[in-house]
Length: 290
Image (cartoon, rainbow, N blue to C red; front, side):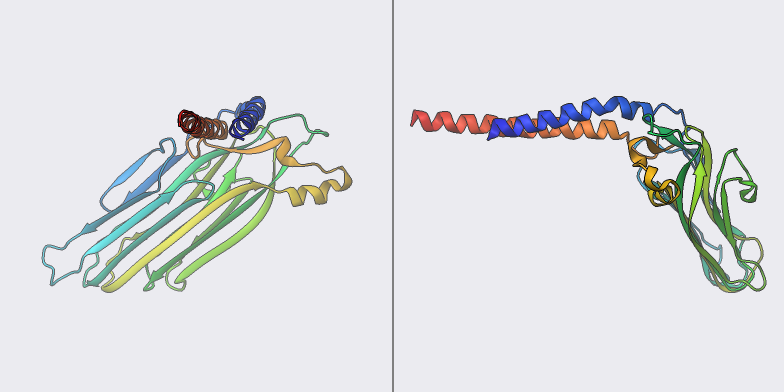
């Protein structure tokens, strides 16, 4: 039974190794690293996220020289990475006769492609991709500004509304809008092996003096997936499994390479089984000597 278990794991690893050329082909598109930009009232940073990134959280406070005249102003910003890209911010002040100017913003810029990993039964001009994005901003009282959104574009953009594939923004508008939010699932058609540019952002900005208590907060997120249901509806009886020939590829520093993770799992499985096999052989020899 022990040898059978090892044989099974070896067979599985051999099958995974046989698939690696397909995975390598899907990784053939060169994408730039994702960038995270954090901007708060006391610090600003921008740079590529490292390999296997962990969630990032930043915060700062500004204390008044005379506490009786003004409360502490706080600002936080965070960015989370994985299949879901998430940005979040907040600013607030309690008992502020004269609120200082403050800001908090979080942005993730990334690149994305639908990589071809094999020859499909029929050549496709485009591939349906489902975008799921949501966000919310809120302020109190009126007069504070919060904004955010998501875009995907065939060219790098500095203005969200100029994106030519997908764009949605939200904002509070003085003096009438205290909050804005969205939750959108939309399918877009992307050209295989083409590079697209994405951005998810949220920010709070307070440039005027508002006495009393005030606060602002917001978040925005986005994720992508092949839309098999839309493809089935389009192709009918000629449909096939998109995941066998295409894969969503994002900036390489957002997630570890699947091929490396699979081989690491195989190596760990073989190590555990071999250690168990050695212990079993030692126990068997001890029993024979007895």
